[in-house]
Length: 222
Image (cartoon, rainbow, N blue to C red; front, side, top):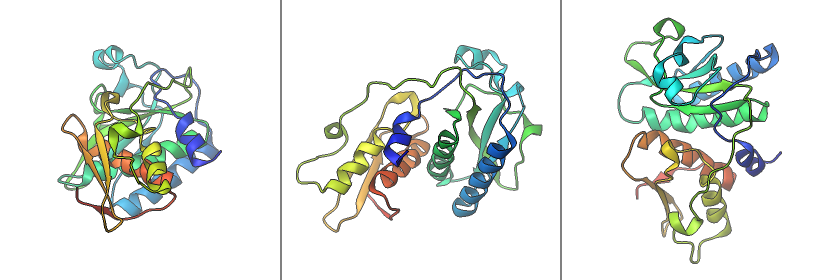
């Protein structure tokens, strides 16, 4: 499965089977999280067999069921942490998808179970990613077109591949409130409109864009 097939196959899933994640996949995820934390200066943590974060009214209202495993999105307080968590969290999400697991980004409809995860000095939890074997594989939602998020006229093929990949990224409320532009110097600028989890969404779509292009690069200011 190539990167585009992987991104296309991944959809948000809220209902999970009562099925344990095997030890091999657990070690794989822990290794992916460890590498992401080292690169991003983060403290994401894999939480297993913890059912209480999703046993609240809010979780049921959000149609979550059977969630016993999740990734705690922990990072330093202050500017930049949410975008990094979006970027590296989505990297782990797609790694989980490649291992046959399902996921869902969760910002508010969960309870913080303090004993389940660790917070270092100056750290906070910004959200979680539900994880496990979904009752379904989820479904794709109707989204925007490339011309809705960039000016495609005269743009190189690599740039448009990045845009196509970004349009496959999950965003809060599926709003896809991002824009991309290509500067004269060849650098790419990305902008996310105001809204809930704006910075985290920006990190997610930047990771997708880079995955579509096939390389990591610096980002210009819009």
